[in-house]
Image (tube, rainbow, N blue to C red; front, side):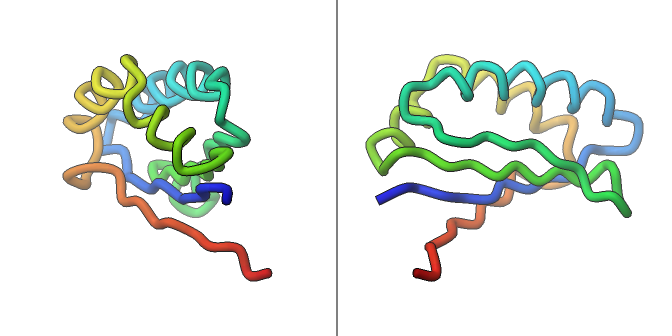
Length: 97
């Protein structure tokens, strides 16, 4: 079964350019993961500092491999001081049908 989630966070005032650079570089790496199906980064039209990342992985094993990728920790360590939340807010999604 696919693992699908939405990750959300808000860049601090003045940090949006750095957050965009970080998430852009990270997205390139995640999209190369064998089990990654989608890693789509968006900002809210009405609130451009608010980021939404739609992620889909082949299955739970692929998601766990993503979590254990060596570039994930450094990315999160660099991101945390640049966002308003304590960490990305994750919402796991189930298909309707």
